[in-house]
Each structure stands twice: as C-alpha cells, then as structure tokens.
Image 1 (cartoon, rainbow, N blue to C red):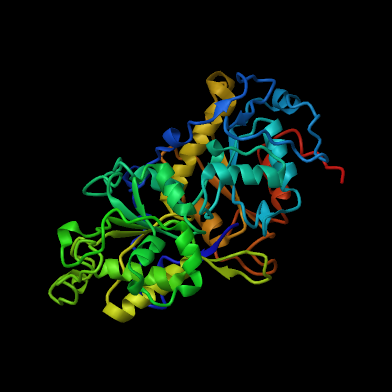
Image 2: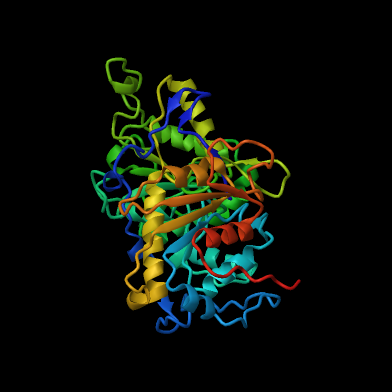
Length: 457
C-alpha cells in the first residue's frame, strides 16, 4: 500500500475536512465515473475467446516479457473451462501489497500472472501517483514481470480528469480553459499529468517563484530544480491591476509536495486572496458576521487533495509522512492564522468517490477482457480488495455501497503498513501473510477449482 491513516477530521487543529459525503447515495457523489473515456486508448491484442484469455496492450508501450521463472507455458484455458466465466474480480493496492520500496513482494508476480492466465479481472487501485498513468503502468510491468496497462490502473489523482469539463456540476464554470495551481511530485511531472487530463493552463509553485522570487525567500536550495521545470506564467502577478493579474481558479494537490514551505505559502496566499488573484487580500477575511468568519467566502479557489494518507510504507523501517501530513500541516497553519476552518475536498481511498470511479474502471476492464459474449450473461457479483492499510484499503472496501450493490470484500496483508500482532482499527474479512495468500483465499471462497501454481525459484 502506498499510504495510510487518513483522517476525516484534523483533531490536532480542530479543522473539519470537507470530504465527499459518505451518507449520500452513489448517484449523489460529486465525482462521477467517466472512466470509460479515459481508459479507452488500449486495444485488445486479439478477439476475446472463452478458451484463450485476451491480453490487453497499450499501442505505445513495448511488450513485457514475464520473469523467466514464471510458468508462462501453462495452458490458460483449463481452469476457465472447469470453472466457467469468473463472476468475481480483484482490486489491489500497490505499495505494501505488490511492491515494497519499488521491489516486488513475494508472490506478487505469481498472483497477477495467474489471474491474467485465467481471465479473472483485476485493477490496481493506489493512493500513490505523481506520474502519468501510462508511465507508471509500464514501470510496474517491468518490475513485476507482468503486463499492466492503463485500462485497469487507477492512481489517486486519476478521477480529477472528470473535473476538466465540469461534467459533474462541481464548479460554476469549466476548468479546462482556466488557470489552476497543481502542486506535488517531482519537477513538473504532475503538470504533465494534469495536461494529459485536459487542463490547458497549469501553473506550479515553481512558475510563481521564478516569476516573483520575493514571494518566498527560503527556497534557494531548490532553485536549480525550479529553473529546470518552470514555465512562463499565463498572466503576470500584478495585484495593482487585478483584471490583468494572474487568477487561479482551483488548487490541486496531485501528489506529496516536496517543498512544503513554498507550497504552503502560495496556497495560503490564494486562500486569503480576493477571487483567487495572487497578491490581493479579501476584505471579507475576519468578518465575524460572515460564515467561517469571512474566510474562503470571496471567490477564492477551491482546494482539492488527491488522497488523505498521513503515513506510507517506504524503504525505511518506520512509516513516512505522506500527503495527509502536508494537509494536516496546512490546516494547522490556516487555523493559527485565521482561527477558522480550512475548507477542502479530499478524494482517494477510503472515500466513496474513488471507489465509485474504480468500480467503473473494473466494469469496463472486465468487458474488454471477456468480451460481451465471453461474459456469458454473468454479472460481476463480488470484488476482493487486497490492501495493507486498514484505514484506507479496508475501511474503503467495508464502507463502499455502489450503485450496482456489488459487495467489496476486504483482505488485509501483513507486508506493508499493518503491523502483525496489532489490532487493526478497521476489521477486514480476513488477514493473510501476503498477496498470493490473499488470492488463494479468495479463490477458495468463490469455489474456484484450482489454486495458484507454485513457482520454481
């Protein structure tokens, strides 16, 4: 698992988090699943067959050869013929489940290869991100020795694609042609991700700092990196002439920020501004007669986080702070300055908006994998969520109630954030040693008359 310990209320700073409402029906959620449009670039390598599983490839990516020790020569149709079309599917977290510090975990390649051989659909659902989906899928394919493509891969910020053209009524106007601030990740990778989603005017903190160095005087250590990744601003920063000055219409934290101080300062400036015009200050700020003491009540840009995870499992033996840590720090600064609540929207696991989007991706992937005729008229009846983080993977699967009422069964593994011997805050259906054991348990639950073949080391 990439991450851990999301919090819906910042108890340290008493700031309410404006999350996607969990009490709403799925049809009322503010992020709707338009996954089909985004995951449509892949083409099947051959027509679907009930006896031969269909491989999904990305036309722009080189083919991936599985690791030599995997039994790729085992016929793929035997178990399908015995068991029929699978009516179940899987969703896997990545860090702490399939990988640990970019290295494959035991059983990960075997588990995924077995599912692919037997036409059992699965998606990768991660709170990680910060890079193009196509690049990350190719990277995972190489590391795991198993072909992975965009059509069954969802990162924390992937649902932001739905927000470009205001398809979901989230904004008073479309964002496609508006300037948006995107922060997080290495260099300008998140800018490139946002542009791939359709945002035309993406501004980063580096752009602002290079255009106006006085905005934050303590980022010299990052200056070369900022010079390498910055671009000219779409408009100058001129608060004396607001109609001509840079105006930001939304703030997106796509990935973990690298320079917390700079990003905090620029986001604070925008939250205190008048109508998102950098360098201005709203006259409504601090007005006790207004809602939230007038803060974030004057057309300031809305603030979005792609995931809530406070901690994540990295190479170090103890969990490291993630995007949720930055969110808590920003909320603390905002509270100290204003004594008001920081309004923001958070997606990612465990929130229903992300699971709704992921379920649509899984539906579309299943149709592509099995074909309309290959499904044999059998609907998807169960999804097994395999994760290492009780607070995101397990809670999200336990709580999610989708429009199709497909049950999600949570499986917790011991290879990531969860510490064996402790009591998980959110109870999974079962706790197993690793992802391979998770797949074996699920197959047994479904009465699948085969188990994952042992791999010769």
